[in-house]
Length: 282
Image 1 (tube, one colour):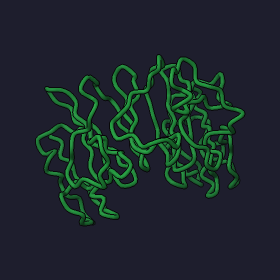
Image 2: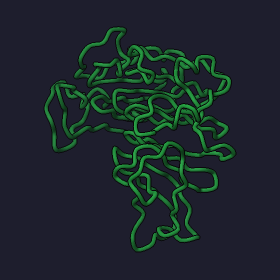
Image 3: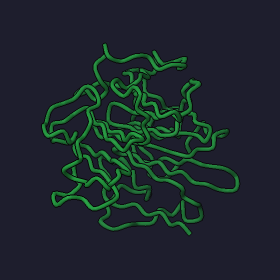
Image 4: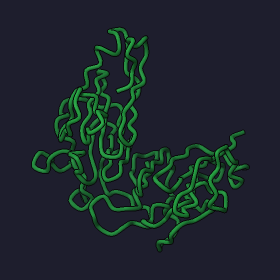
């Protein structure tokens, strides 16, 4: 049996813990609504939470917490917040396999590779209160969201991006080409990531305003905001296009990189083998 607990704090009356109040907790507290449900995934944005459940009658996505930018996807109109989980709209015919949240953004990917987004717009246009499906012939299998940008990974290992260019998070405008086969790429600001041509990517990650990917050859590339050294390039410069991270001084030649994760101003890598004395933190 799966039991769901949420802890830590609420802020600004956002109710992202789903406990019918705005209290903060220093210990896990069960979310009673999910006691009899099979919870498949949980993801958290800045002040909201999404929960994907699986069952005999189909998938159901729930949202709670702040809805100031429509990021819960539970109502056609924005309300400030919800203190109990409510079903998200628009997924009646979709089998969801991945849900993602960060900042005031939310996204989901279906089993057939469709991408749904809602919440604060990546293009500076009106917020989206009901999940919208991107009209595209591309099939997506991963998505990662930052504060002002997002990355998408296709089944062919191509990386596309959504959103703004704070600190160079998504490359210089003149270096960005339109994504192929995307009927609404101009409106959604969907673009190819420059500098990754010919490299098949197997995993993507985004922090607040920086990004990282792993290629099928086990290489890591990072770009975007670098003020805290989170790009792992030996400096604190911002980068407008992907740069290869040299891990030879961290992992030995028998190691392989499995996953990369990005936080607000930091990055860490999970790999096999034994790291060198100075560890694996970028």
